[in-house]
Image 1: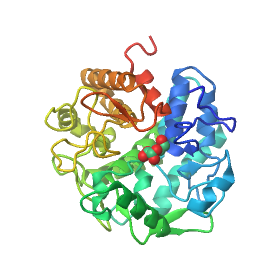
Image 2: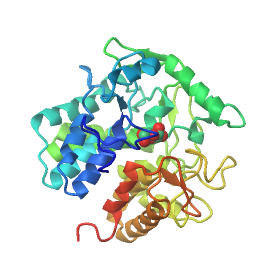
Image 3: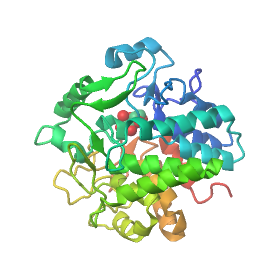
Image 4: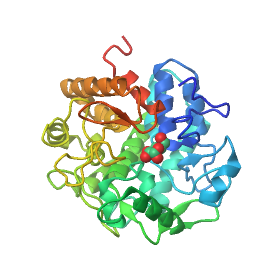
Length: 362
Ligand code: GLC
């Protein structure tokens, strides 16, 4: 964490592969800094709002270390024009619980950041739309295979995602609220918006935000199919059983029994080093492919938060994740069966395992 800390006030996810600021990564980093009892927790959370627009929009990437570097991809200096799960509601609530001060300016930034989704991304079905697969942070998920070459091919899908950047409709303020190619109500994304709205409501004790969170949770739950929550929207994506698509259990606790069963089912998502991101029975399952099977620590952390009301399951998930983080030498993601690391190494968010460690805080 120390080595990846940047003079402009955030932690790079990885110095070589991911030098810039990423929205949900930095929210996770803030939680990690708080776990380390380090003041950088608040600074990192503040940095997430560096490029917030007047419309409330929070970009998924900040290029404060070199603003010109964003222009070739985003035709805009300093930041991207898409967003990512607004984990700042949860981060702020957790930091406040650890005794850090969240000032009124930051509360306002959080509120405007969340309100953006209701104002500009809400569909008639009560679900929030995303305009690019990158907005979920689950880039190459089989859920997006309708937009990928068949059979799946990484280079081909990378090209498709570039084309989808061109299909964004960007406002003068630099935010995208629609796309001519991709308008999906992702179960995972909606779950994380609802969860962060609920966390914000708890932080400021606000009934209107609590209601919004509850209504969004109910809208998501209309798409529970007995195994997973499916996505909705203009082009419904495939309801592939993935661990991230179980995140609506953060706000729909009545499903926790079904979710817990799946997370530990050795024939499906379950494995020794934490749940696979994709069910092993899915034909395209790939234990080392980027978002096509491996275990991701930040998804496990969120599922662990949901499982706090079931201490035995939470402890089991924590144990698996800590072992995966350690065996993979703090890799970005790992092979669920062997714990062998893949992707960037070390990846800052994998330090979330610290918060899950049984001895943390004792
Ligand atoms: C990759 C991940 C995304 C993450 C980023 C930085 O793009 O898919 O979720 O935010 O890397 O770690």
